[in-house]
Length: 348
Image 1 (cartoon, rainbow, N blue to C red):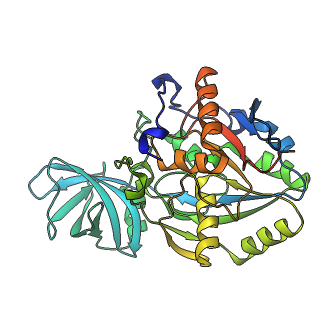
Image 2 (image 1 turned 90 degrees about the vertical axis):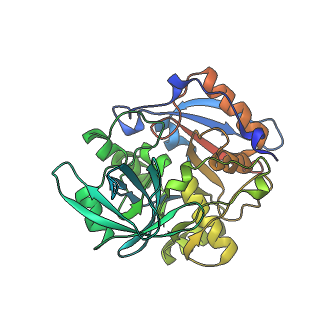
Image 3 (image 1 turned 120 degrees about the horizontal axis):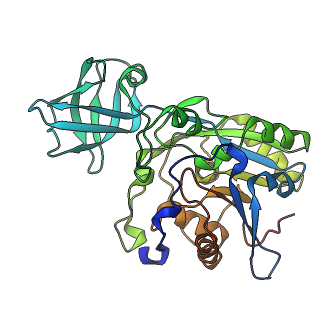
């Protein structure tokens, strides 16, 4: 398939700029596939997830935590520069995206600043053709806590505030390292997790540190030429055991978000429970680990739109997105959600 196969027109007013008052206030579009019949689209509220997940099913969350990954500073020449962490590669090193009138050369120094007037030097040490590698004078996480800014996605137009500091994290977030939230998890609160547990639904976690590359546009019309960005993941042994038991019992593994799905399918392909993955999922991919997917609505021409199209069917997703636009669902990170099954499975 071609890049143009994954384009659609989205009215700008449907891009959610702020979270709703409560996490579970979101709408939920269920894409129901009953055997060989045409897919049905059912408009729901997110709280209806309680009726869509069966006792014995397993929810798999990404427990990554968003770090204050955006840094502002000055080049040695005095020009403004912005660094956005892509991924942390060592205690004092990271790969970054850079915004500047002219990118600093390897070996030069960028002086990062905060509103309190403090600063520290960052050394430019490499470039891989997409991202720049930089060296910090001390632990990256420590410096980000003092100098960093929450990295809201580029389509959210306001500066991060106190509400974003809470609501751009999931309630299961515990392992710092992501520069974008695993947004499907944003719809869950502690109460709905407890009610699911009381209903006999189990949950497990993976960690995949979402990189800034998730927002990098696909520029190749021929998708076979696109290079996916790397993201670090780790899957606990107890999660792998829970998945195996769930399938043995005839129940479903439900990934909460595309990041959880990519981690699980990467492990199935490589048999490695941790490492870096650049798995690029497009239509024709053979899913082995995940049976159902909870996900937000994704950007046109994005790798995430290609992933959900591979999972639920290209025509099914096109129809679902057209329906969502006509019915004014809210899109992207702070937007509404979908509940998807693979076409050969039936929802309860």
